[in-house]
Image 1 (tube, rainbow, N blue to C red):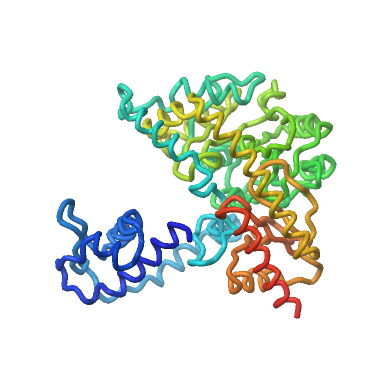
Image 2: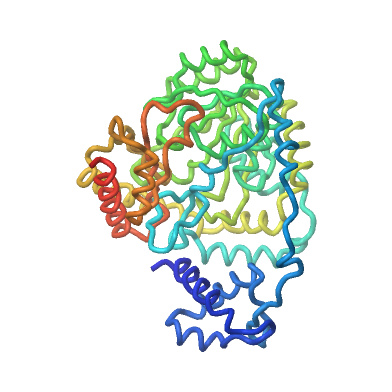
Length: 479
């Protein structure tokens, strides 16, 4: 059982028992809870911390945990908030682009599934694949550095900017890099800088739902450009620029999310040429470069490395390859656009906390970093192979157009006529949580799809069991 599942179950049981205690009455000791529920001290500590965060208990160091007093305002009748419907609907006037945001596609990868449900919808490494010891050591060393808790430069630590710049290569130098609070923050900053509200922005179809949410929250109009096994299709990209007048393309040339495609060598120059002719920027989301599988072979350089004219705004992050909580990423751009990106980043964030930047520097400068990347490449390949074999054996009806050489997931096309929403619901009832395909499209999808992550589970046995449960769900839907 996952540790977090045990924590959730224990927290739920303790909530049910809180009514036995009066406000300010002491709860049983941690040792008693360990013995009663047969869980680890860490599980007890985390469950009590969860209840404390919800305001249900108060923990007093050295004294134990106590039932919290009712919060001020509990039981007070709620006011009438219906006026907000009128205030918020003003944005939907005919001359404005609606800015209401459907975050469901993002929340699928962030929300923990119910206890006992196998997580095929995760977007991050589980604890077992994170370099936890190396991260802890790096953070401890970083915290002891002189000035580690002071204010960093708004653009980021020079050494970290230089390290990221070396990963891009070509004309990109440290002065062209801004340190951001992860990749999502970098994409948000880029789209706000490059396109005014109401403008079209070209996106690959399908594409990452978090990027679509960013665009819509900024009042932009995503316009789809289909991809195939070789990445975005240049002839359709050129037609989309011509038809819409867009000045921005967002793309993932390496291990595209969700298809896994890699932009073909012959198309790399074409994409840059087409964007340059349209007077447009290319936002390159290079999220998966360090998530390469062991058998992928040499990787192409980032588009930004082949871009002398400042067409590409490059985005990458350390979060996916380390921990959801190491939110350290970067933007790289050349020319006047860099000043606009810097201004928006400062207004939105001031700066990324210095201890996180220092910890990132400590981590990537140790031999443990290289060992982690090597071990992760081996493990991701093994998990991908396990899931692929299980799907071919148990679910041959699902089409796998692309076998990715990097990333966390497989992109599956459902049989024609399959109700995608019904299948996802049936899968949850069967005890497995896939990511539905619909949120990855900004227009009508050509068919039903599922995205299955092989990274967020315990290992090979859980992958096999998850696929078996998905078979049960498909049988239910196809009856």
